[in-house]
Length: 106
Image 1 (cartoon, rainbow, N blue to C red):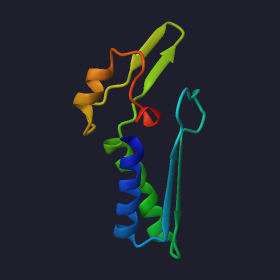
Image 2 (tube, rainbow, N blue to C red):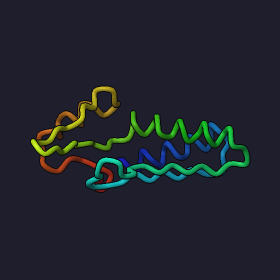
Image 3 (cartoon, one colour):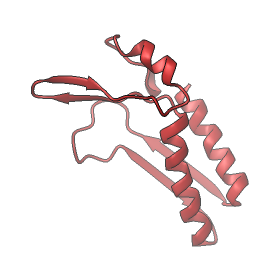
Image 4 (spheres, helix red, strand yellow):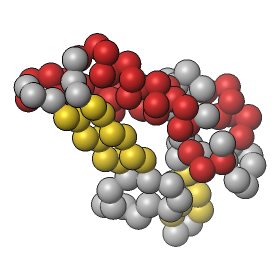
């Protein structure tokens, strides 16, 4: 489901901003603090449209792509709340599971 949503975002941005292409890559698996987890690239003849499309890609990804985040600390772990996301109910049902639904579990 995550890959499908990323493709939908990509196509929407191409149409809305008139850019040549959009590439979105999100890291799968453990990500240490400070490591890169997201790359968005936009090809466009005009930088203004490219920057706006990139900004919107990140905003949409955060709100519509079902990617769960578990923070792990020395003293335990914590699932980050998904209350502001479209997929909140589904995320809440997975919080007690050991293998959350992520981009590689489609």
